[in-house]
Image (cartoon, rainbow, N blue to C red; front, top):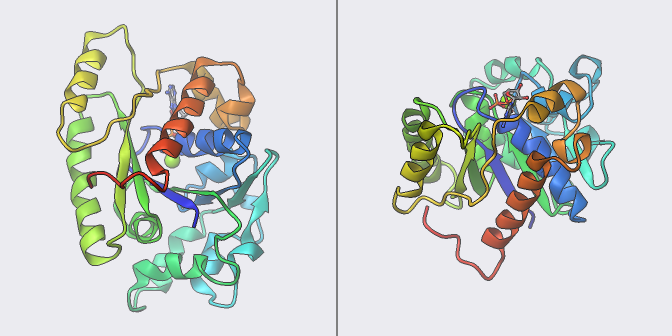
Amino acid sequence: MPISIACVSGKGGVGKTTTCAALAGAFGELGRRVLAIDVDPQANLTSGLGFNPYQLKRTIADILVDPTVSPEAVTLATEWDGVSLIPANPDLSAVEAEMATTVRRELRLRDALNRGAGLRAYDVVLFDTPPNFGFHTISALGAAAWILVPLQMSGYAMKGLKEVLRTFQAAREQLNPDLHILGLLPTFVNLRTRFSQQMLEGIREIPSLHVFDTVIRVTVKLQETAMAGAPITAYARNSEAAQAYRKLALEILERTAPAASPGQA
Ligand SMILES: Nc1ncnc2c1ncn2[C@@H]1O[C@H](COP(=O)(O)OP(=O)(O)O)[C@@H](O)[C@H]1O
Ligand SMILES: [Mg+2]
């Protein structure tokens, strides 16, 4: 069974997509076989890993609506060793309406990913989700074992976190009892401001919520990766941000090691 992680925050611009792409690159470098899954109709992960969403014939939408299509049929090899992608394009936004009457429709993604060879070929599966708690985010929570929450060090982060936790609890109770919180990842950290530092200290004090040691600082290099269509680990190999994501990948391996307990949810 691969380690499957959904990157979730309920809002946009906090670093979900950047984190998925960077972790895909970092795990690939470690020799892990990675499947990145774009579950966001905005298709930023698809372009972030080098594809033009408008030129794709088959996407994640196909496995959701057509039960004869297996995940392999829509999986693309990326330029980076060990990193594959199930891409999205804006068609994905129509899928929810098409499935309006399907029973347990939020589990369609999980079931689709189990078709054929399923996810057995991978060590790590990363789901990128839209900036809301709608159908596609819930579908990812139905399919993943872990959630990783990028938390932008800004005034609204705490409010956003409460909503993530509420959604997590609901998904766990109603959809996927095997879902656990992997951890909170501080993003857009600016260690020169008191605000960022105080917030970091604040979240580290929340009982029973794991916060990664790794923090992702504000850097123009990460901004550039979105334009470059490449993970930071390839785009700016020796940058501090690339190193940070490599360290995060190692923290994740440690936290998900089979001997370890899943920790507190
Ligand atoms: N640590 C960072 N420092 C500076 N810019 C960042 C950082 N992380 C992400 N970005 C940029 O901020 C924007 C939003 O990031 P993104 O990963 O797309 O967020 P989300 O997927 O949560 O909407 C993108 O343009 C991205 O390149
Ligand atoms: Mg995104």
